Length: 361
Ligand code: MRU
Image 1 (cartoon, protein in one colour):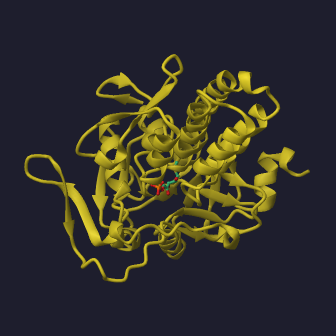
Image 2 (spheres, helix red, strand yellow; image 1 turned 180 degrees about the vertical axis):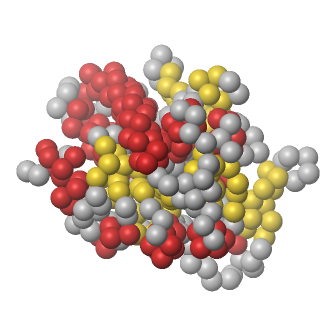
């Protein structure tokens, strides 16, 4: 996507320096700040502390993190250690484990001396495939969007939750790829952007939609039901962190409530995700691990002071008990379709296997 008019991916690899650069997303939307990642610990920290976030970008960063880990030492012990460290960073997004398993499958059979260059090549392949797959999701999603009735007669009003856009992937996004495709094709589209407490990923969505010139409006999470009830939403599209074999979807906490409100208001609820988000080994949503994050994400509100310096304000005392689950599970029966790089399908085992018959075995 173009940022400040320049085609930009969210992750820049520099194989010559054997390091990468990422955007520190904790500083957005106030500052676009690139940081270098040159060690295994820095890569793990970037994922755990959510400098990078969003399932596909977590996967690509983990792949490069493994390549970085093997820069100077690449025997089996180092490979095992690096996979364990990166694999323990965040539990819900299966793309992390998918990417590490794919890297391991390529690297393990090689002699240690060949592993470093192979790791950089495989990480680059994962990043490039993510870009191509998201572009394909955009094309398939656009076909669905074109067919939707527009309640106001002109503009298509799409609601999204969290950030499943350019910033959550290497490029284009998943849920936002069809939105960008629609906007670029001249289909008038407006996006309702849910704030997404407590980490406020909706602010990231608003920022990147603004970069691309897509009309949008932010709303507090609790306003979504009212907007649906009053006919201001034509469709909801979200991304996913893991989709179980039966079509149940884990995504940012609050997604389930939006799906429920869609069902009550006859609004299609779509989930957009690439193959790396599908977990055919996971029977249903009950088996998906839900990340519980530090309660201070809830107790403190982050922003900037009047000079633009990052600042946190305490809204709850340190000892106040809070629950902070980062994700929830939406049952397949509430999902109108899953949009993948191979097309759209019903959220069911049969639907997914129809698109990925090689997973039947
Ligand atoms: O905790 P986050 O910000 O990593 O959660 C991100 C989401 O829930 C996204 O919706 C999901 O990863 C899909 S990203 C294309």
